Image 1 (cartoon, one colour):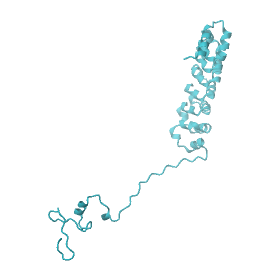
Image 2 (cartoon, one colour; image 1 turned 45 degrees about the horizontal axis):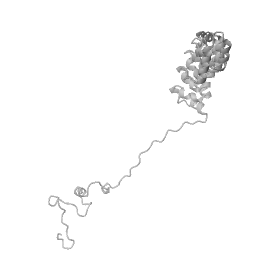
Image 3 (cartoon, helix red, strand yellow; image 1 turned 90 degrees about the horizontal axis):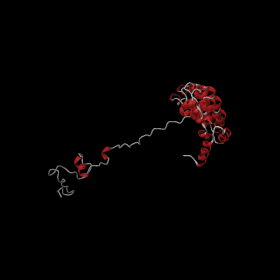
Image 4 (cartoon, rainbow, N blue to C red; image 1 turned 90 degrees about the vertical axis):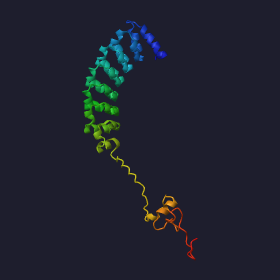
Length: 249
């Protein structure tokens, strides 16, 4: 949605004719994005487009196809914003000098270069030095190149997140990222299960059985001075003997 200011600029640009070249230039020098509303003839004018992209590189989006193929216009746009490479003609994205200028300004512009240049160590190194995240956009062969990775990590340790898996445990690479004094953390000690104390005399261990059942299971009567014997079908305790007369109570 346009702001009130943008609406005023749009209406002014739409009122210009092919004879208002100076007015168009004065406008795009201040508001590069106003090129999108300029008369068609001025979108093919190298000077008008040049002033627009110098103010805002992404104005190249509204330039004519001829201007997007123009190296001079492309260089002016990339000098302002490396990500303007997305609007540069695909033939210029194969131009090594154009690409180097773009990735030096914004490393993430590596996303829009040709596949051949994504394998170029110099191009990728410039991109990584500007932004470590650019390594994720490089060709897989460079991500697994140990010598290249060592140089890249030395300048941008954040690139460590995007190297090949087989290099992530390389001590030299890790030290290049974290410093020569870095020592990898020791693995945590395994949690040992608590030792259960051994019961020497298991016969004295407290049982969870009901007392009656323990008395019935006892063979030597050690559980109680009056064990339940098989007296009267085991339903009653055996009569106790009197200590004096030996008679039953």
